[in-house]
Image (cartoon, rainbow, N blue to C red):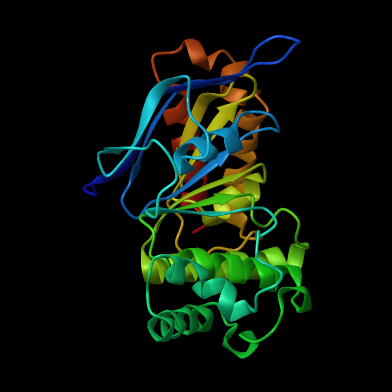
Length: 283
């Protein structure tokens, strides 16, 4: 974490879902810390509990054991210190672009004139200032997601939570949004927790990647990504690190297969150093 203070603490979180077929343990003893201003990616196969973890951090779900704290305060429900961007944007179709972005500000009691000025400023940051009067249905999928991001960031949240927000978009639109999101994050410094099953996306965007094992969700490995920004999904360095991360997502890292897990050196250290030593001769 370096010298940055800790923003978010997830401590021993477990969550099970009950059904007539029996209990399903979705998360098992998840513990992690997120530094102030960090861009954390959570990856794993479908069903590993990524979205469940994000919902607990958002306060939309509760854990069966453990706790989550933001700035030292226990999270017991939704709050204005957290904003969540969903897969489909979750915009209000009966409102214009500008009205969608200013909605949360008005709900907080900000005056119409102040909220409108602030919302317009955020729309300018995402390049949609010329579309403020458009209806949501008039926008492309990528534009709708930019509106959703603007609506979240305009509230100046302590932490931005993103649940696979680009998964339904075409490849070219996603790549454009990767650059835009990185630039927004660099300019605003918001702490981000972003869940995805797309490993290349995770390496492109993240400072750090947490890999969850499937059912029950446990932290399998962490990777620190030290590449310069902005990154693109086609960067050679991104592709090579993504290959290493993918081995852990699949549960078949070469280091462990070769018996390295029994050595004195932690396999995570070896993966981290092998990735970066390989890149050293190319960068």
